[in-house]
Image 1 (cartoon, rainbow, N blue to C red):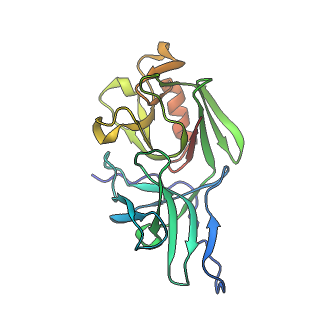
Image 2 (cartoon, one colour; image 1 turned 180 degrees about the vertical axis):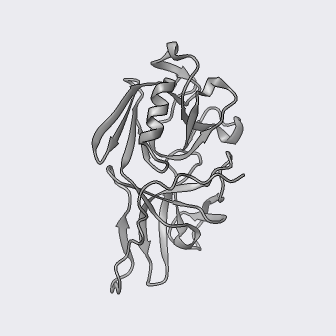
Length: 234
């Protein structure tokens, strides 16, 4: 069953003005306060450059390994000419931080989010900002030294519910981050953000790489943070 990602935020509806005279035209779509994401409509190649002849760095599918709608965070765009637009997107692959260029026609509408989650591994805190203003903070557990939570720029890729195992808490967010250690885990060691049935272990470096928080906190975060939100881990 295909579970669509939450279509939260307003559709960007287009990023170009009419009758541009100069090409290529480059523009930023995601910054520290606003993120833009789009669903992957069909299997698509992500290229090293906005050129179909450039090397393919990853192939994107329309669904994730959790059978949710696959979405990508769109960092930048380029109008090559009046008929051809490419988007630079964050990729769910190793090495973390990888990006690639995808044809605009392979993606659905752009959606805008105003939230950005920050996780500080040193202070064991997670802070959610909306338009640059803090609206939520909580203590968290992060990866042990042997299986660290990776640092970098990521995004919230999906929301998963209905766990049979209380270890994960009531809900979990999936990210595009990957463990560089647990690469043999199912779906390549996805870095998740989830609750826990062992709140006494928090805060601390206690996980295999995922970000854990108490169940009451993850349930509150679900109400505040839409899918597609940028994630910064320091």
